[in-house]
Length: 327
Image (cartoon, rainbow, N blue to C red; front, side, top):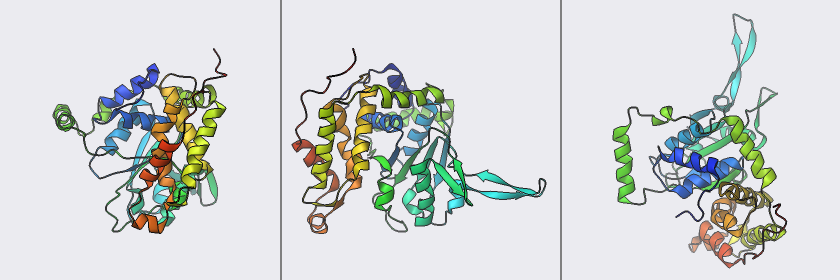
């Protein structure tokens, strides 16, 4: 269940709008929105057929952004993503044929099926919000964020994402199967009502792109974080880093990611300051994919999320966290 209701009216409308098409956990929608407001990339690690593409398209429509999808395969080339210079016989010169990365929301489907060279091409786009084509740098549209998927079970013919690329994802989420029979029946009911295989075409934006960018700026500029909360986040991350089951822990990028998500969650809740309850729901999703377990502990059955959850539950939260908020 969702720990906090959405009281920011615009955020609530975005979530409601997406929920008109996508049947699923409201908390998942909230975390996706938090990741986007924090201007971060999201990795969905889950089975095929759970509605990830539908969710991403509905979300992109709701926030008034462009959307493109790339199906990653072993023969996918970097130029298939970023584009290439093409000779025009009519104009007798080269012109840039932009790849699908030139968009606001890029769905990288089954990202771990592409070879490392292709993954590296996407890495520059994710980190720098730019791509280099034949030595020339091209800036990507703003905002730009990648929503990638990978199947956690089927590993044949895949290229596991290196730690450096996993670290670029602000948050890793899992959709899971429909939680109740009623939810799965609702999926069938809505499918019967659709007049097209892509119901997102009929969705109207809740906000335009400029408004959503302004919301991203407000998350950065208008959400206060008490020093005690900064210490709390630091103690959680260092606790994970120093856990005996962990051989390589989260980098400072992980610490920053947890802070950004907490601020975005406070913004969604309509508050101008962060509380411990803005931090706790995102600890596993922000940190578990950034750690490498000790081999012996992993063989014994240790799991990343369980380790992170253990540290979170043992870390004492501050009682005072709103001092200094402007009235």
